[in-house]
Image (cartoon, rainbow, N blue to C red; front, top):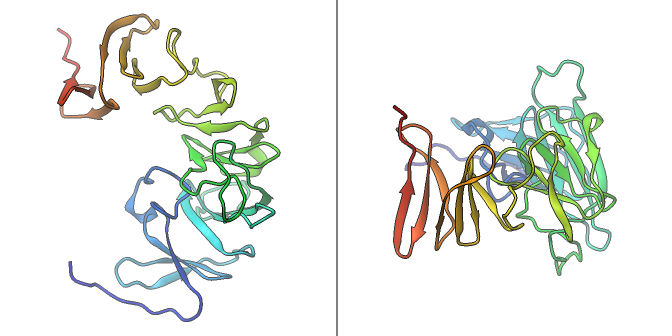
Length: 270
């Protein structure tokens, strides 16, 4: 709990956390080296050495006007975004390639567009449909919420040359797996990858969520399905069921029975 170091930087400097409040991804990236703070000035970005606080300034990076509002390291890119401009709602997203093992892929890119998140209400201050807490990253994809149609960029490749555009009003959500789902008001959900199985088994409502493989929650209803989608067991929960992994085989599921917690665990087969 003792202070390891302090550091003073001259001029206008912001400290952004790339894993939590200032991130573009809702889940903490793997590896603590991705979760350190970033120093952001009007024209430079630096990582901080956790041992001594010494900044390492990224070279060759062109920052957009308006200042960086959020920042995340995912895959081989450091991805940054400005906040939507009041009135125009224009945003610039910058991706700087920080991995040197990238072959012939693009190293850096910038894209400026009119920010529009269909699932978000209009923010009173800017007048834009913008929710800072909604992630751009879902599963293995990043969706830039362009008013002309969200631009989906593969996470591991991270280049615009491999992107695809969704229809206006569509956006990505997760279902508890790494396979993103395309959602739009008044339309059925569908997987981003057309080769993936249907978003949910027959007989479940659009509000149903996958807890773990074969186990679904639809409101209070709990359903365990076999590999052909047939119910093996049904129950009810008074809270949001969740999955976890213990020392035994497979994944267990926990839910609420009144004020009690109930856990269902797999057992080894004979």
